[in-house]
Amino acid sequence: MNAKGKVFKYGANVDTDVIIPARYLNTADPKELAKHCMEDIDMSFVNRVQPGDIIVGGQNFGCGSSREHAPIAIKASGISCVIAPSFARIFYRNAINMGLPIMESTEASEGIADGDEVEIDFATGIIHDITSGENFTAKPFPAFIQKIIAADGLVGYIAKK
Amino acid sequence: MGMTMTQKILAKHAGLDFVEPGQLIEAKLDLVLGNDVTTPPAIDVFATTCACGVFDRNKVALVPDHFTPNKDIKSADNCKKIREFAKAQGLTHYYEIGDPQMGVEHVILPENGLVAPGDAIIGADSHTCTYGALGAFATGVGSTDLACAMATGQTWFRVPEAILFVLKGTLKKNITSKDLILYIIGMIGVDGALYESMEFAGPGVETLTMADRLTICNMAIEAGGKNGIFPVDQKTMDYLAQFAPERLANKDFTVISADADAVYARTIEIDLAEVPMTVSFPHLPENTKTVGTFDEVTIDQVVIGSCTNGRLEDLRTAAALFKGQKVKKGIRCIILPGSQRVWKEALKEGLLEVFADANCVVSAATCGPCLGGHMGILAKGERCVSTTNRNFVGRMGHPESEVYLSSVPVAVASAIFGRIASPEEIEKK
Ligand code: SF4
Image 1: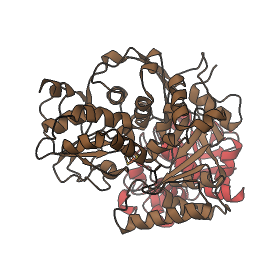
Image 2: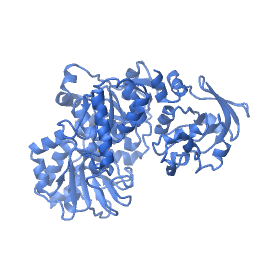
Image 3: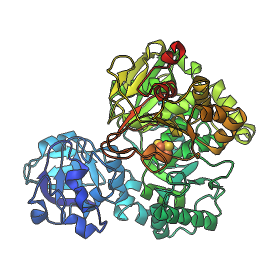
Image 4: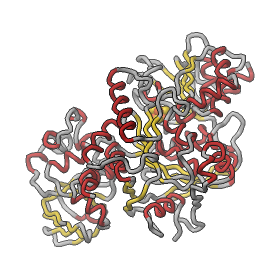
């Protein structure tokens, strides 16, 4: 399984409130949530994002509340993977449970520039920056996590079992 | 490279010989827990998993404790949903109000013999980490995790690193395990153990009772920890003999200890004799101050109980200090026994009479005001000294009310004096 797209780059401690502000939490509909994704940190995100695009963040990505809405909003906006040096614990769990691929790599987070074209191989953990030609490695997901993501999240994975 | 206690328990449940920090594993679970807040959405998710039933009707515990006896129609509907689900699934561990085994989830699971050393447990409640006191791995998760674990008896984990707390010496008079954990949270901060295990070791461990260890592990999450865990010793075995005799007799548990060459992210040594009498000021558990070093804080209410400090030992401590004393006029003092068993034992020992004579009100063995649910909500501007575990903005009521976290002795003294006070002042009275 691969991901390929243009990079939206953000800094450290991107919290769940900027990913999806609490004022929109009266719905759990992914399409509605996607309309406001990243709104409080990047007003232009929703208009520019294309299916397959990638978010590269700084450390402690997804800190804050335990809302499952945050990874749902990112995924529904078309993002195929989030790369960061580290993720907040509950966001990490929720992202995988909702079927949003996330990868931990300090080098990639530092080395990749905003707007770069990047290709990711989930099986090997290799992150290839097409624009700069550089390669980075993240720890690949074990087979069962790849299966959870392929099944669109934990519920789909369980249903298939 | 050796493994920590937590890593070894996780490896065993994943069927692996070795795991390392950061590794993602799929592990079998010995117990899955839900309450009346987190279970209703999990029941909806459960329905979409196509599971024909729960993985094991003896290993799913459902405890309606947050808004019970039902606070309003919405909570009544939620509890009805759980009750019907428990019945349809034939669950053995569903605890109805008034049941002799009912109470606050984290008090009753160990008391009802559902936790033993070496277990791996998840609960859709952040204070599930309490059970580490018995040498088990236990951590909190969300409703989707609960639903899927009810269906499969498994979940996935990211193997945590650990902070090792080496305890030495003994706590001084009037200083409790609650002061110790508040002191630790004040030292490392509310994200000081983010994603890590908090493993306790050293000669000081044997000076702590099981009730002490439960209080300490209960608040691991308040330091951001994934779990808290104590080594298994004679005290653990005595506890099992009292509360889990069947598992003890059947040897249905595994004593797992950390490898001698286990690798820790860091090691913190604590001399128990130096732990000060600690109170956490609003609105974060890390805002700790030592009693006697701050200006007078007058209060309106005191809460003694919860899954942090609602065990029989806590009520005994409170009653011993309240004996012959009265709650200061104008102050409300609410006692929340942690379980029906604790409630009944306190009745038999005459503790409830001491509380009534001291002008306290004794509540039902449920969460009550701890999370701002009901039965003791604070008005705008009111202050409460509480033996619970969180003092976030609005935790016990109005966003402009304040909660000060303390030990049981400090809470009793504060009720008597109407301000944050030390139990030493009662003796001098
Ligand atoms: S007593 Fe308080 S902290 Fe414990 S389970 Fe109930 S609401 Fe949560």
